[in-house]
Image 1 (cartoon, rainbow, N blue to C red):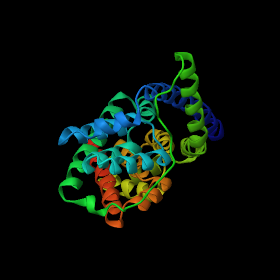
Image 2 (cartoon, one colour):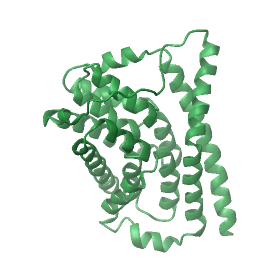
Image 3 (cartoon, one colour):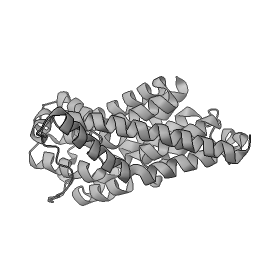
Image 4 (cartoon, rainbow, N blue to C red):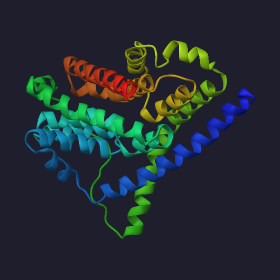
Length: 294
């Protein structure tokens, strides 16, 4: 087929599919959050031991927070004396896991890939949150006051009104993520139509043992969102790139987006920010090799 026609067809189909998924899932999650106050979220996170880490990772993975909302909520948790490990589990899980990302993974890469991705990233968030607390990294939190972010207070009004509010929030979030989504799908479309398949297989195919760590290293400085990386990953897989390398790229890129990195540096000292980057890299490599083995 004509490469241009292939690229345009890929772009149109994936854009429509991902837009519907984003708006639909975000509306459902926003509706659910209207019934849960921020105070209740903090109380859940205050559980002691591993339970607090599991809940922290769970809340981070279930809520579609962007960096502008994650950071104020993180500061609020710390000031409310939520256990440091639980907060770190939330911080690690938040950019990597949310219902929109998981829905995209299922739709584009399959249920098996989504389950493995969710299992590895969730386990990493729980485990590294516990580790960072155990080795005393709470001393690397700056004494700062951060304001802003969404207010997820319980909404008043009937169910229809709440649905409209949830969709309005989802639409605003969609407008914010749309440029990243367009960029990601456009890059994927160019790869799909114009990049030679044998070149991708030779450089990053499943037979190259270094493809996974290299992809993770490339992904971290890219600072791309998961919604940007997933359509790129789909095109690369269709061109022969190993699934493990694609997953490493997605985790590495999504784990530290530019807004989140800059905001994290405003509340955490350099050593803690570096530790979080290391966490993302290790998670990306482990997930990538696990994908290749399975």
